[in-house]
Image (cartoon, rainbow, N blue to C red; front, side, top):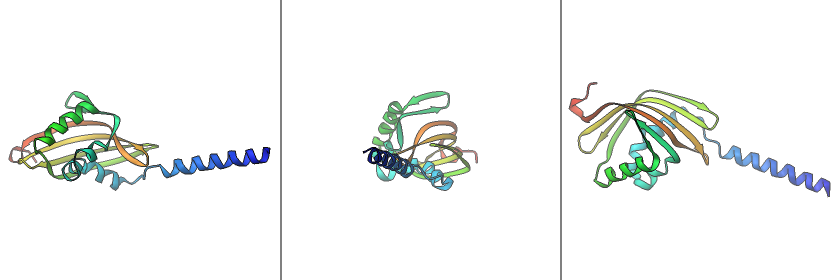
Length: 155
């Protein structure tokens, strides 16, 4: 009986370890940066529900000196999206990624072009957390360099 219990215990430990390994996120710099680049495009291509799924429940955004929790941030995005606004193109530059266990830190500059002829240019520091084997946005800090008409941007 004791041997049977020991065998069952070992099997449970091994099964739990295999499941934990299966749910780890890939440590792939390019894949993570592609996800970061395409956040606005997910909203444009796949809709609000797919966009909302990119953010963990306790997501926080700091942008230009103010902070927004997930619900407040997504409420503003939903209103903006509902008014017909869409990203049409995004591009990253000066990008770097570091991985720390279940966290990934990405730093980059981004330009997002929108369907109304405006653009956003900014510096972003983003912390993603591995949830269920997928990277999800956890904390983001955004510094706006330019928001407005493309022709008014300094390149």
